[in-house]
Image 1 (cartoon, rainbow, N blue to C red):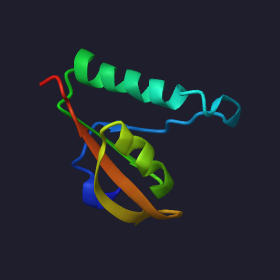
Image 2: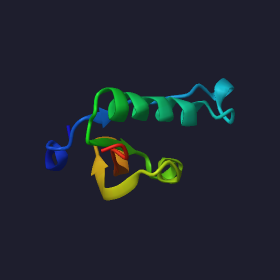
Image 3: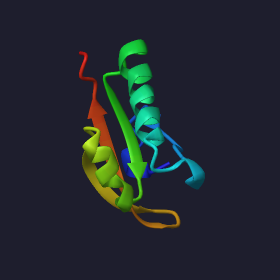
Image 4: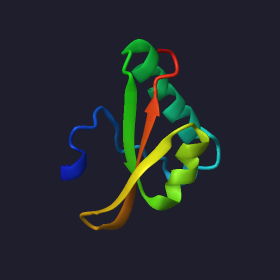
Length: 88
């Protein structure tokens, strides 16, 4: 865990698309479905994630907002992002 952000939960964790399936919109569809499950089905008010800096623009296009950058374990820097439930 990241000690300074343990209060942020729930998290979108470990989304990975194999190279052979990339550039087909699969990651977009997976995130969209996860958001639907979180926001509509589970009625979660806010959802969090962390990613490597090069992936932050992808999530930003989907409406995620950066709120922190910090080092983590073997990563020189990770980006912490959040998205509010648009249905509440």
